[in-house]
Length: 254
Length: 333
Ligand SMILES: Nc1ncnc2c1ncn2[C@@H]1O[C@H](COP(=O)(O)OP(=O)(O)O)[C@@H](O)[C@H]1O
Ligand SMILES: [Mg+2]
Image 1 (tube, rainbow over the protein chains, first blue to last red):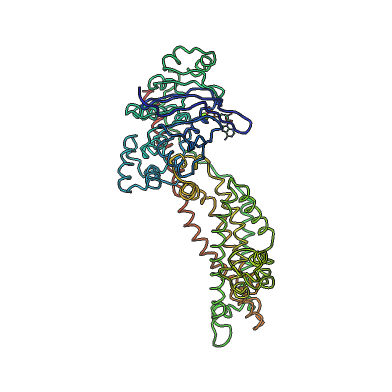
Image 2: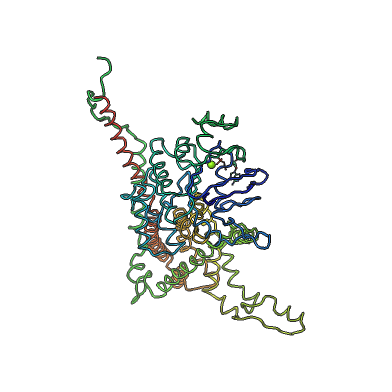
């Protein structure tokens, strides 16, 4: 048995009176790729954002690599973490967004170098070499000095992946990384993600790319209405769904 | 032979059409030309302007009114007042804008109250008010608030827990009073400009930076503010230029170390009205020209990553279109 990288125990999250997550249980083991499927509005993004504490959960617990996210537990009581401690936890968790969210006033190289230089205060020339190598790895070695506005969507998303990797995370979160892309650009981003998965990165991926989930996923989770409806091996969930809701969803996206 | 394929078609001749006539435009230009000529005629044929009074010598043995010592002194005062009050305005304005966007309702309310007050009170009134505050308090200091009252509670008469204090007339006379009146008022306007700038940035930017582990301060300094500057700089340019002119209000503090006051004094002494006003206009025009050039460069600096974007995207589209059409051609043959 490999160790658990992510463990969510009965996670609840509400926005005002709207309960978005109604008790999510989920485990992602080290080196695994877990794909989260589900209709729009089912709480997938919200769950992902809870994992690195961009949202505070109302009940339940989330552990990443054994550490409780967002709180210290002392004498049976939870204490809110200081901002700086939360930031420290986030360093180990990379996140890639649907809309890329690259910093438009920085070149791609500066985008990738920003966090290692500012947050970890690493040696600048070392970071520069590493950032250049990362951009090379995602196939953008020639676009080091370009601003994000000059790049295509697929290129921007690959820079965003390199930017997250520059912090050497032990876990990567992807929130529909290819949903904002033109169809012909989806492949290049998925290729980078497959490459990452082959290298043993632990990944939690929200996606509508069923093919990707089937091919790369070790585990598929189907969410609807703030609960996990079913989860298991991709072949099982995608090829032979048990629940009506899963069947209905898959018949629409396949 | 039904439809000819793309390769066989000849590109038609480029369109060379006769442009639409626009007589209204020509009429407008003619009217403007006549008005300009009339204006020039008014200026250059009228001795009342007394250009020599303005530029070369306003009294025997003295320089033109623009360049006499008191006027240059006043110019220095105006520039110094503009710079210092804008620095106060920008620094305090950013602070208040950040407070206004805070999660904490007390900070939000304080920031709101500040902008409410200083936007409501006219600058002229503020200038007079700050010039007279020393009537309310004779000494101003930093230290324990209510020190005398607290001292009495514990039976100590005349407890003085002020670490540092200064006579109000020293602090709030003249230049400093004018600077504070203008700077504090400016902060209220700058706070609104900065807030609008920060709010114009996609929340995804702060989110991405936070997710990378940047602290709140770093998110603001490194990611949000540099982008917000694009929205903040143009109205701030307006504010600086307005401030150059509003410095003339400090005459009511009263401060004499200021451009318009000095020119006015000459007007009062020599009874030459118009040329003095023209001299003032020329100085203000010169200052604002320099400021506008400066603004151009500041805007260019904060526009990096944007200005090129449109052009680059166009180029990309052109390349794609080229490749697209060649693909079609390839398919057709
Ligand atoms: N910040 C927020 N405030 C209020 N409601 C929100 C917020 N974020 C998400 N929601 C709501 O939570 C529900 C789930 O959203 P989301 O997690 O984005 O779904 P998904 O990613 O599965 O499409 C939606 O109904 C959405 O309107
Ligand atoms: Mg979503």
